[in-house]
Image (cartoon, rainbow over the protein chains, first blue to last red):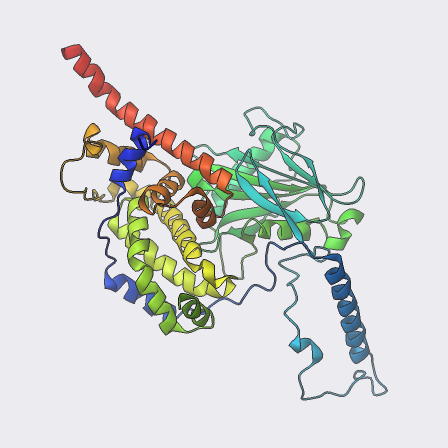
Length: 284
Length: 184
């Protein structure tokens, strides 16, 4: 008695290991490509942080403060107006430090992430570790749901009372919709906004193309709005679109520490493997 | 030893990466061939995987997790291949997999073409998790590592994939059973 169902045993046999042999020409072709391919730089910061102990946090803050004072001192205009210190051929102090986070990847004000796992939608995302979970989805989005309905949203709120909030959920995509292209995703997003009524009121606005995944630049986009910032992430293979929403204007005080709500949204998207394309890269 | 090779490759050593690529090629190909059900697409996916792995390798934080990371890269490459070729899928020549030789009571329960037909109707994500479990023999924790999902999520996805496969097999078999019942 193995406890395996008939279906499992059929699949065991159907997918059984055989003498699979990759032709040498495939590896040779890959190596030829590799000889012409530059490796990407090591990520400046991991996209999922471990919680930082308070002592380390304080020490880091002190170190940052010392460096900041040193940098200010070195850049203060001197008597000749060219700077506080004369140029030196020796390496500057900052060159011996680990690379700092790129502002375009992780917003200032975020020092650590907490991972949220959606049991309803089966995905993970990260939120700043001083935020708290506000509400959890109790069911998937369903036909007829409007933006005001909360049962289908995963919600996280910022540390300030009445401040910023984050909502994440997924919506199904009709088989006829081609969200695998940026144009298709834009069209779908516009329709979704109409369906959700108050989600995004100025589509098709100046959407920012984004990339999902490290293998190919699959389409995602951010639609900045006056009051809320919305990202649409396409998963055509599972016929779903993930929607990530930051619920504050870009200039709201509660998001100032992150450089605005759009930068905050971009940072959160990095925890979902979404990144800003480089010039010349086109999603889809 | 492999950790050394991974670290060398992370620093840009192409010869070290070539050793890693050749030693993993057959397993990657076996996975891709089963997920995509097409030899040409599988070769493309493996080639793409190796190039991407080379490019992204410096971003792999733990060299000991190279194999899981490489399999994840391959699975994603298969998704991309499946998506990009979706429009052409009806014209692609699909090669049936060879079956183990000799009598097999289990596989004889269903026509092999029926199993193949059902499997290819599953979405790539479900095919991938079935391949990880039934071809590579990975447990739920290992599947979670490869797909970067919690083990509980891996469990539910595997459950749904089994359920979907069973439904497809039953749906395919139903007309035959009805016909048989009518003739007796």
